[in-house]
Image (tube, rainbow, N blue to C red; front, top):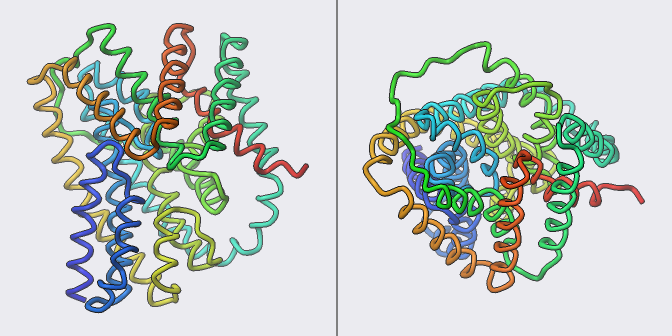
Length: 397
């Protein structure tokens, strides 16, 4: 048990590291763990490495909102948080934005513990039906998103172009195609726009945040319904799940949206471990890594659930502390220079991971992301880059 606790804490440390470092994903560290697993298994139990992977992944879902909101440098799962998060940062509410995603992650764990018994019973019976209906479900969600827009023609063009870019990117022979795609659409485009306007965040308001029950009601219901369904379908991650979830709502505030993104991000990952146990299907990179280490049984899934609970308790404290540190110091630096440094870092990371073709995708997606600013349409429509390829994936013809 002591060994498991040590590995849990190591996982939390690595989760903080990947969460705060743009471009360094937990899947990358998981690959290294698999590479060294023959050596590690000579000294440690497989379940210890599994605990490390689970705590690392879960911690990342709590922490990764911080660079997305304060620095405009998103990862794949948390790219949507840049949109309202950056607005709140410019209003001096960066810490409140991070706290909203934290509330969402806590909600996700509560939902996970509630629905686990239900999923164990229902999931194997409904999986085939949901897979057959997913394309039509996504088409309806896309139509619903577009008809809510005031500038429908412009919105349709942006949505369609992002879908074409998404299809093209995923069919290129490059490593991690979503990295340059989503970084450009939501990260570098936001940074370029901030630099062009020479905008710097104001002094941040750091106060004790309270949980408003009215603000968590909508995200709670949507997360509980959408995330478990999307979690066991290939090609459906946290970003797609959040977009589908918002299509059910006529109106959603910035804080509610951030709560939703935080909750979906955490729940999709947590459920992926349960799905691995129930169906042996790998619905996340970390679940795939675990499957290469061992076959999960009742004992192992118990340890995973316990790891999720303990990691959540630790991450609540860490997320608040780290966010407050960023909030206190963000105004002490030249935000334009910082944005330029982050831009260069993101371009270097994309080049190192995805090569020259990745840079081409990054430039193209950045231009499309900037186009939304000039046309005055919502950047959330850029999630067509994931929705449209997923629709084609699930079409039965």
